[in-house]
Length: 92
Image (cartoon, rainbow, N blue to C red; front, side, top):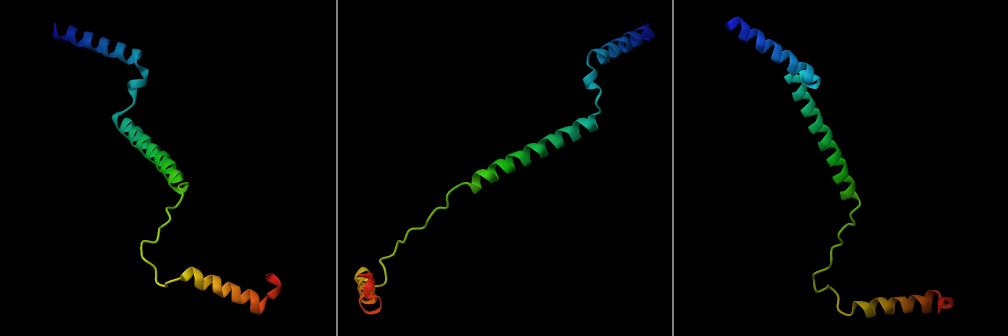
């Protein structure tokens, strides 16, 4: 009787294999497939995030100090006036 049960289980195994032909992939092949999928996915995500990071505008730093020279604006305007009057009077 054990012989009959063994035969029945073999028939069931054969039927399952015929119903699911895609499942005949070895365990090692499935693991390599998953590893390959993860690598491809991480490469795609890396490229997407890299492109997004490159297209961000750089953050400009703002001066937080008080400055070093009093009346800096007047000094610059005075030098420009002196240059236009002495060196290039035609630029008035």
